[in-house]
Length: 251
Image (cartoon, rainbow, N blue to C red; front, side):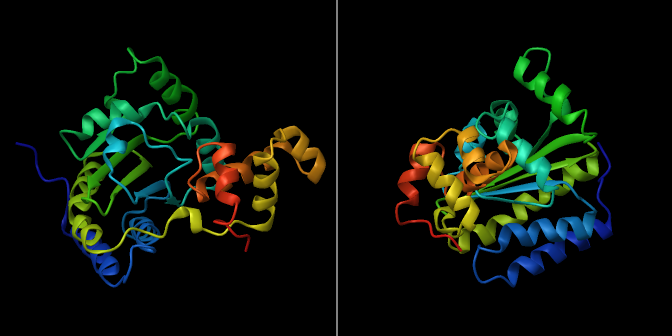
């Protein structure tokens, strides 16, 4: 039998997270609160937290897209933009991680069969390794019709981190069951520049043309467009255009 990897200080840190969550009136601040306290209590500085307002079975089946699921994070913006741009629609760990979560609460990239999955091997070799992230840990839990949560932690693959994710996922279920789903991402305000780029893209203008028209770099256009897609829950430029037609307002 393996020894318990968590100590009293770890449990105190988890209880502080639960106390902070309990003080919330709605689920709107839930993701940011969890990310903030995990960083404060455990020192995790690279996290992406996804909170789905729908049936979370899509996470386990690998159909979750970072373009269509609202998320909070404490990762540097450039890294997040790269994640969305390169892996946002077809994250290679999705199906493999999903199968592991059917039986357990957490799974690590080091456990995945990269020798049989070219996409996973490419992701680990070209993205995870060069950026010196120790591993990719996932925790997910269902919360019935209210939704569910998924936490992706870029950290060393140690038993302590795995145990924290597993236990914390279960502890947070009551909050998700008792509170309304977070505000629909389609109502999240876009910045003035994000709105402008989104409208031009929805009208059919290619990214290079938008960059020239607005006098900004191609990379900046991609960043604005990625954020507009994420904020509006859109998975295509056509869908983005439909949702811009009265459902999204620039701030």
